[in-house]
Structure formats: structure tokens, C-alpha cells
Length: 117
Length: 113
Figure 1 (cartoon, each protein chain N blue to C red):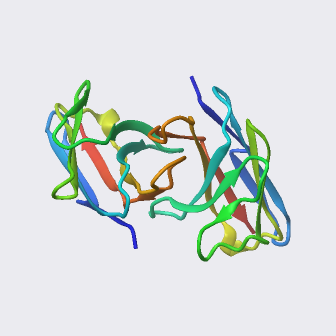
Figure 2 (cartoon, rainbow over the protein chains, first blue to last red):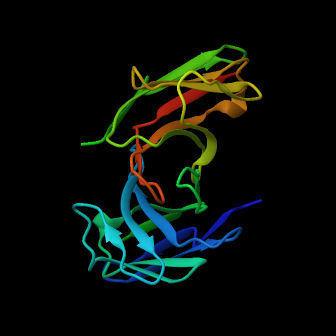
Figure 3 (cartoon, one colour):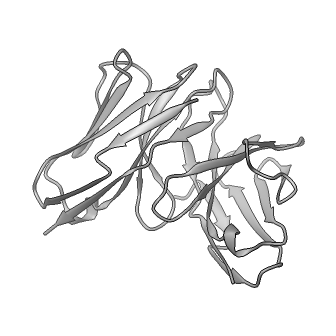
């Protein structure tokens, strides 16, 4: 069965709207979750690492004020795209990895396709 | 800068053929190399490789890692149309804790009936 649940799967909205995407770990508690972005015909690019109970760690070039991450519980992380514009249109995917010795595969949610008009 | 390069970028074969997908990498503090299959939605996990020379196998799929040459291959034998997908190679380069993955560009595999 699914390890990660991501919601919503599709969003279409007007420019200037803020959009919240949820990522839930179903099988285990996750102190760390990851957010990726994938543009058409390109690979996944890590945006940020979401840490439960503390601030997210953003990759270089990713605006933290634009992409707000909240990891309020051990099973839920949210990504909010604030004041979205057409250039933010992309496929956003979260992932979780079971904690342990660090060598656990990441499991991905089904992704959210965001279209900003 | 950590880097993962996959080849070929695109491959079209007939059902029943065998294919080999390649992945080379440069990463500091190597932890593991992972293969994922991506169809219409998010990637699904195939293999995780940490040691050189040990083949991992799952049905018609197999994969092996060469840490000296910084290279991995993914083999698919007796391909079926359901194998059509983008195959992603990713490397985890964090020294400890939860992994940060660096992905290659992917190989788009098309299996024609």
C-alpha cells in the first residue's frame, strides 16, 4: 500500500493565489520529509528538507518566503506556494524516508500538478 | 558539485528486447545509489545499492553498482509494454541522517508491441 499521501493531486488557480500542498507519512513517523519540484521533461530537483519541530532547510536558489514549509507533526508536512505566479507552475512531489541508519530509500507521494493561470 | 548523469536519455525498443540503462555519478560522501521508475505520477522505488559488485534482482529487473568507476546499470530483460516509463537514478551523498538525493535527468524508455 501507499507509504506517502499527497494532496491535492491537481490545482488550477489564478495568479496571486496561495496554494497549500499536504504530505502525509502513512506508515511511519517521519522527522524529515523532502519537497521536490519537477518541470516538464526534467528531473526532480530538491527544493527543501522539512524538519519536524524546526525550520526547513532550503536548497540554494529556493526562496523561503515564497515556498513556506511547515512540519508540525511527525506525519504531516505542508508546502505553501505564496502568491503563486505562472512561473511557479510545476509538479511538486514530497518524499519520506524511514529513519534509522540513514540508508533507507525515500518513498514519494503521487505529486501535485500546479497550474497557475 | 554533486552530479548524476544518465544515458541514454531516450530509448525505444520492441517488446521482448533486453535493455541496459546507465548511470554515472560524482558525489561527495557517497551513501547509496537508488533507481526509481516514474510513470504518470511520482517515482516508485526499484533498488537501493550501497556495495560494489552485488547484483540486486527483482523479477526481470536487475541492477549493479561499481563504486570504483562511479557507475551503475539497470537491466530489464524480456521487456513488456508496461515497462515503458522514465527511469531515474539518484545518489544520496549525505554523510549521515536522512538522505538528500541528487537525481539524474532520467531515461525515457518506450517499449513498442
